[in-house]
Image 1 (cartoon, rainbow, N blue to C red):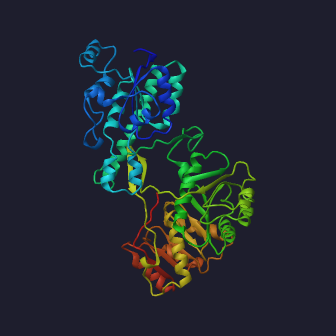
Image 2 (image 1 turned 90 degrees about the vertical axis):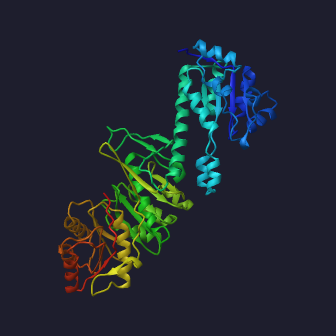
Image 3 (image 1 turned 180 degrees about the vertical axis):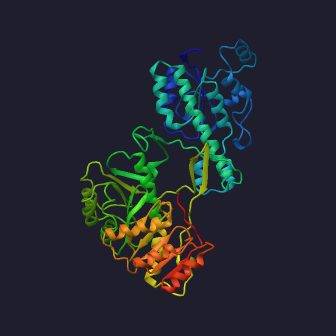
Length: 510
């Protein structure tokens, strides 16, 4: 293989022309012959720079409303020929095919068109054929050709082409080829996922082109990466870089708070993906104070999230606590100044973005894929299982506890009262253990559980849980039901005047 290769010709056919002018002028300066089509050809001509229309090379016009412009042997032969192959070089001369050293092409904006809510016809028209073919051909033949496949690479390419009077190294050609195959594979993934949006085909294709290297993974000896558009979802106002564990906690916080998005002021504190504090009040300040009271010990080093703008009074309370991350839809200016008082505290504004519909995780030698649990229990979903019905206040607390239970590691029990988390038992191997953990924790922080409610993420196989809850003062229970022994728990509740409602929906979170 040769190393540096001097470029003498380029094919340019792009949808996005921002940033293209400096490259075209550099080509003119270096005496590089430019071939082009359609709108790109006009753009170059309007700059007063000579350009050879592709139609002059192929002796064939653009046809089918522009669907076919570059798909021709004289174009692809100029790109795919091997310069160290005598037969290829001879055929270029025989068929009057120009050698093409550089291909600058991008793709129709398929993903943006889908996201815009356009009609299917418009979406299909944005499936690029010629561009994707040019990218694959030029990238495949990186030995002789440089492929620039995105406007994001224009500045990089301009620097390369300017550095050595039009000579481009093999290393750079191969680097641009890798970028090009990243573009083409991502594009095809987006198209497939559009056609397979209902997952009729049991095939998984995931492509994220925005990658960030993290300091490390869960532990310092593990590598960590984040793939996704973090900047679209959050505006980071202050603090250090987020870690792998920070991102997991932020994800848990965001998904929990989505349950309370349009509710009264609600504040949550999370630690290790589980809420250790949650309260809903008339003011955000009081919601934070009461959320913190749920477990002021675990709150140390936690992630805090609000469903309303954070004001100065709330910020001053937060500032007393060491916390890693604060998330809110907005902050008033005085609150922001207070929160910035800790150098490393990460302050995020959560923007409105579409969240993924599916969850993906590695499993064994493959992957698991599932729909997100979009079901939120409402009062309309509840069936009274007992002779005693919940009071209006208990109903509100039951729904409050159920929303939180859904976002807590199984097996879980959540205890709540007056729209405040009293305690939860999280990630236990038995539901009884989860309940005992929750009761012990609530009592250790001086919560009076008389009149509190209990939520369970799954059914009770035996009446032991409702008996333990009753003795702790709990008066109402929400659970999915579905056990062959449901009646045993119902009977106990009837005998002790406890209300129980069933949702019919289990909310395991493993």
